[in-house]
Image (cartoon, rainbow, N blue to C red; front, side, top):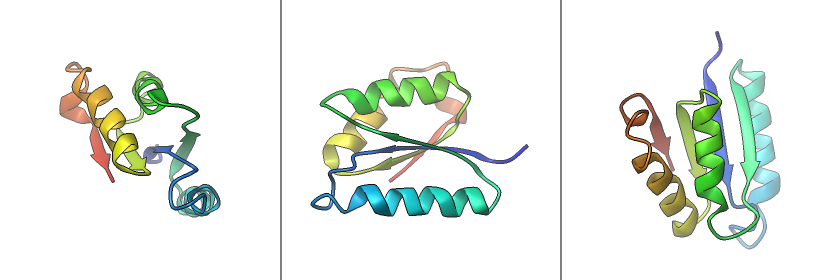
Length: 92
């Protein structure tokens, strides 16, 4: 089974350049044989719910891409899931 990676991203990060760059990164990871889910945040707090959705779908590699707010939401969502903290990793 391929490694599964969920990218939780703020497409407005980097003055709006992040969206296109993240799609390129996701495509590159998929081409390398990874299963990638790219989810873009749309509002404050959305990163946390997207992280919960990714965990529910079985993703254990979570990439937080954006600024401090995105990372904060992703880490807090993981912290609120003690049943899955031990086997999930967050990368920024």
